[in-house]
Every structure is written in structure tokens, then in C-alpha cells.
Image (tube, rainbow, N blue to C red; front, side, top):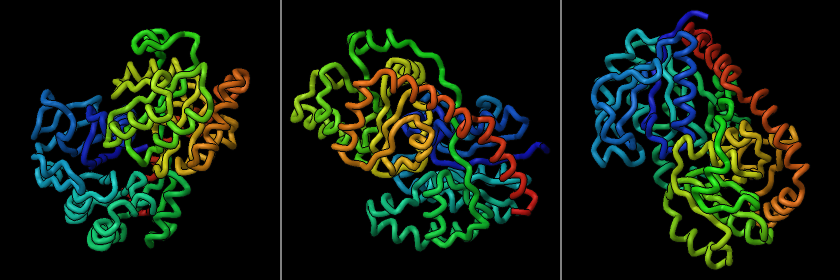
Length: 389
């Protein structure tokens, strides 16, 4: 395939791991595209990257060129208005083959699309699940205004919209995007990095005889962590420990109160944010992965759990029906009783866990491998660049 010049725009990028799957996925995709010979330029902000990252100029990152626009505190809140990205966009968009806009409901997308249009560069837009009706009901009046003034016009102007799941396709269609301008390309996951289960257990004081139930993600209400605490307590987990791994995003104190009220303080471990090595260790140590989210795009944490060979209990809102159809776990309503029953079943049946774990790895390789997803993205970008999308 002809090498493409790809400009990717998003409000945060590696090493801003606090933003979870969006950043992890962008890093995976950009690195893979660069490795396949494409010129990848990322325009983002310095939100969450730390003081050591150079600002205001392009720097090399795994074969990609990344521009971290310096921001002030008022630039770092939704909808991420970051005018300091403009100079870099005006520099790199002329001559680009395609501009990729990522993360919905952000003003950076409107700015980048306008500059791209002036340069004759088509855009592919991936809202990353932000247009789900459940999310749109949060701060609903603000989002209605934003949809009217910014998001719907943007959807009309981009060449293509990337949907991550069948649910995404439905949500985009409900907002008036024609089927011909929607391409279904899921998130990608790399093969699991070997972790050290014993090191993880020693680090957090978890006995080797105890099964580990793992939650991995930011601690926000939409992730259903309250549902998981109730389900874990109801499953009577005498021989299990629940590990809640991820940065607090507003529910930490309430979560601690709930854990105490349910009487499972001695069986729940909160790790806070884990770096890449810590996450690999957690995945290696766990026996079951659980994510009872109320709304998602396509959660990278689920794909990472599958790649690590973990049987997974996920809510219907995680939009991964393949987990159940492939026999790699269960897809459940976002209900504590449903999760409690499924959790108890898996904790009581090591043989079933092993079988599900093997099918989980096969599912990750078959449907979400980096090679497979990047091939689809390359084809999409090439069609858009050629004006045939």
C-alpha cells in the first residue's frame, strides 16, 4: 500500500495514561501505522503528560511526530478548547492525505476540521463512544447545545465516521449520518505482555491461595464500580479478593464508604493507577475480569483482559457481545444480582475459567489483533484520501 501522511488530532496522548483506553488505543494505532511505513503526525495538548515532555514543537515518539500544545487550566476542561494547537495544525495539515479526529464533543475537532477543509484534506472522525445516548444524558442541556452548534455540523462535514461497534453504528445513524459514511473498525489490542503474578500479590499483600477478581479502569460512575462492589459482596467471596485498579475520577470516597457498608473491607484492594508493568502483573495475577459499565465505546480494558486469557464478565453496555458468543465469558445486564451469580459460578469452577480463558485469547487474536485492525484502518484512510469514500 502507498505510504500515507496521516495527521491525528486528539485532546490528550501518551504518556497521559490517566485518560485510559483512549490514550492507550491512540498510542497503539499510531505506533503500528508508523511501523507500516506511514508518516504519522499527532497534534495534541500537554494535558496530563508531566513536566518532562517538550511543549510547542514536534518531537519523535516511536516513529511518529507529536506536538504537545501548551495549555492553561481552562484549556484542560471539557470541551477542551485549545487554541494553542492551531499553529501545529496549520503547519501539518496542508499536504496531508487524511486528518483523523478523535474523541467526541471537543472543540479541537471543529478547529482541526475547518483547517483541514481549507487545505483540501478529508477527515475521518471517531467519537470514541461519546455519542452514546446514555452519555449524552449526562449534563444533558450542555450537550444538547453542543450537539446543535458543533457536533452535528461536524458530522455532516467529515468524509467518514469510524464506528467501533455495532452500537456506534446505530448511534451515528440516529444522529443523521448515512450508512455510506460509517465504517466499522474496532479498537485493537496487542498480545499480552507477560506479567509477574507473585510480584503483584506481594506488592499488595494478597495471599497466593486467594482468587483475584479484577476491575481495571478509571473510577467513575459510568464504569459501574458500585454495581461491582454490591455484586462482589453478594457473591459471598470467602476465598477471593477484589482488586480495584485505576485512578479515582470522582467516586473514591463514596466507593470506600460502600466497601465498608457491605462488610468487605478486608477483601477489597484499591491499587490506584497502575503503570504498564503493574497492569501486566495485575492481569497475570487475576482469575476473573469484571467490567459492569453503564456506557462504553469499546473498552480497551476488556480487550486487554481477553488478550491476557482472563474469563470476563461484562455488561451489555460494554458493546462486546463476542465475549459471550465466543464462550470467553458472560455478557450481563448492569445488575448486581446478575453479576453476583455469574461471579460465584466462575469462582467455583476453575475448569470453566481455564476453558474461557483459552477462548478469550483466541477471540482477541481473531477479532481485535493490531494487524487485523490496522489493515482495515489503512484501507479506510486510503479510500478517504483517494476521494472514493
